[in-house]
Amino acid sequence: MRQAYSHGHSHHGRNQSGTHHHGHHHGHHHGHLHPRHASSSGDWFSGSADGRGDADGFGGDGRGFTRSRKVSSDDLQLMLLGLLEQNPSHGYELIKALGALSNGFYTPSPGMVYPALTYLEELGYATVEQEGAKKRYHLAEPGKAHLDANRHRLTLMFNKLKHVARKMDYMRQAWSGQPRTTGPEGEDARTGWLPEFVEARQALKRALLDRTDASPTEQRRIAAILARATDEITGKAGA
Image (tube, rainbow, N blue to C red; front, side):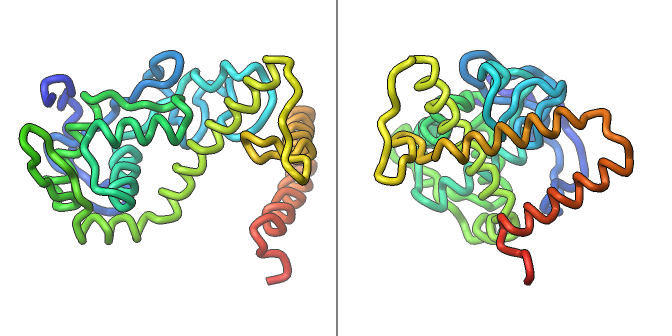
């Protein structure tokens, strides 16, 4: 498996958590994004490099999901640790879990996952239990400490994968032309989203696009509005 993964991007330095990475850090590889491979530019978790597509919002034709997206090696390693925290797993089980979480949108290749797991083992973040020809990986205490130090970042990454999975379901339903199955409060049965929730996000996107040439004064006014809205959404208003 190691031969399928290039170690050509060696570097010395620190990753986002402050841990030194030496030698064969798995630098700039990316997994498979449905239905195409990701490109070499952009960062799926921080947004599109070219501005096309929208991993966070609603609307559009949905094809933008697959443009200019990648997942960094640090992000993949953190997600693997997060999955191992839930269940000790074989490598192929971790691949399936990420695919299921994202509804097939993000499924990393074995040539990406197995070297990442080996690297986590070398760091002491994961331990390996040999089961015949297979290896079952377990979260080690240093890995748990690394997770705890990056818990918010991990939650955001998993939530983005879940959001994309729901958006794909929502849009497939819209394209099908079939009436939606709704829950007791009118929410979409598959995604749990209310129509007014979807419409509000679409309206906000349109409003911001309409102000793309706003003056600095107008930008400050909009930024203040968004800051107040963010505080209300997160429960920080009046705190």
